[in-house]
Amino acid sequence: MTQTDAFRETGEDRLLRLLASGWIFLLLVGLIAIFSLLRPAQFGSGYNIQQLAINAAIILVLAVGQTYVIISNGIDLSIGSVLVFCSVVSAEIMLALSGAAGTTFGTTSAGWGVILLGSLAAVATGIAWGLLNGFLVAVAKIPALIVTLGTLGMALGGAQILSGGTDVRAMPELLVTHVGSGRIFGIPALVMIAVLVVLVAGLVLHFTRFGLHTYAVGSNMEGARRSGIDVTRQTMAVYALSGGMAGIAAVMSNARFATTTINGHAMDNLTTISAVVLGGTSLFGGVGSVFGTVVGVFIPIILLNGFVILGIPPFWQTVAMGAVLILAVWIDQLKRRLRKRG
Amino acid sequence: MPEPILQATGITRTFGHVQALRGVDFKVMPGEIVALIGDNGAGKSTLVKILSGADRADGGEIRIDGTPARFGSPAEAQAAGIATVYQDLALAPDLPPAENLFLGRERLKPGLLGRLGMLDRQAMRAESAKVFETLGVNLKSHRVPVDTLSGGQRQSVAIARAAMWAEKIVFLDEPTAALGVVQTARVLELAKRVRDSGTSVVLISHNMPQVLEVADRIHVLRLGESVANLRPAETTVDGLVREMTSGTREGFTP
Ligand SMILES: Nc1ncnc2c1ncn2[C@@H]1O[C@H](COP(=O)(O)OP(=O)(O)OP(=O)(O)O)[C@@H](O)[C@H]1O
Ligand SMILES: [Mg+2]
Image (cartoon, rainbow over all chains, first blue to last red):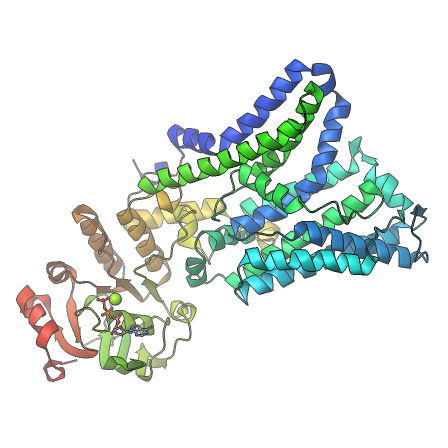
């Protein structure tokens, strides 16, 4: 066999790769098939599918950031709190700019300019939190688990200080109607935003130098450094990206619920981490995909929806998810052990 | 006689109370394999680290092609054409061989896409296929993570990577220590090919028959001093062991 031939993947290689990363995808397809067969009218209805997608949109955006962080061998526990902080900052800026500071209820007549500024502020604030996380992890060398646990508390407390502990419940009318419940080409705007984020993040992760360096840092940090990669900068960029995603998600959340949701995001970190891991991204870094994460986000959502439609107490969804998560990590470790033997 | 590509004189390095190097004189000529041998703790790894920018000498001088050089980091040494394959390989185990070969120096797509950071994977795969072919490295698949390769193949990828980016010198610190007979032979063959392609090789090894077989010149360190500079034809395994255990500075001719 010549060298050039060796660059073509053999059928066996492909099968192994699909089996290793594809079982969770098959699980998702299987769940959808079962629920649609059992209750085609309810589960398969256009309305239900749209609701599922809208429910997934915000967590998808967060999970994409988490995917980058985990591939780089880090973890970000702070995303839910950063989302809350960003949403409060964004909401208050929009209130102040529309001359309605102090309004506590209803909608404002803020224009698109104000909404744009508020959104940019949310993303910039998220990036700032991410840079703080990245700095503490990469420069101060504090374990990511501790750093992001710390900023989780700081961001949540900060949001409560800024808002006086109660949600900001006055949002621009335009934001709520056009982004929160609006449509673009018949597709819910929130879903559209999530799809865009997923596509861009997937392209960047799998096809660019930035993406490759994210894998390299997660795979062997010392090796990446010796290869001339600026590991500190890459790590900070990855956390900044995760923070920026929390900023985008904050805008989506404000738009969807027409209020900030200070107490609504305590579980976002665990939800996204389990989605990312379910999707085949390794907690040890160096391995993973955005596509896997999309699958990992939808599994619990479909499971819950299916159980509700079938009349199974939804508590079973929590039980089933726990089991699936353990299974996913176990399979990841099996894969690693098999690989090592080669 | 040709100029040495690398000439180090009077290199000293002290760690606390340990004098790891006490004035080592070391050179590398163009197109040769120099074996660097010595007992455990003789200072081989320390010397290589200094020459490849991973550590700094307390005293002495390094010249590259006759001009004094000072490496603050491995990246600076690499820029000067010197690369090192460390005892613990610096590969990314989860990435395929081609990506590893180009890590830190990726090929980007031409035009706007390239400026956006878009990788040219095809170019990198094709180019690394060529490198592996000229160096005689046989890999069954180029898509799988490096982690799934055998120890010898991983070592080969690491050496190919170093050879690809260092026009002048590749340092190999005990490249065959963990390998079986067949794989060791392959790695040594690879070292010869690297030399034949015009890049000099510095080989650290504890395997004396191996050293006599592949080296063009043998430099012996003992307790941080250069004690012998020999041609394989002029010596035997016993002769090398004698130098390693009781050689003195006086016996050294640069
Ligand atoms: N970072 C360090 N701190 C303290 N002492 C060191 C350090 N690096 C090396 N030494 C000491 O310097 C001496 C030379 O070590 P070195 O690793 O260069 O030996 P070596 O010839 O490579 O040995 P081996 O064959 O075991 O690899 C040893 O006594 C070692 O303990
Ligand atoms: Mg050593």
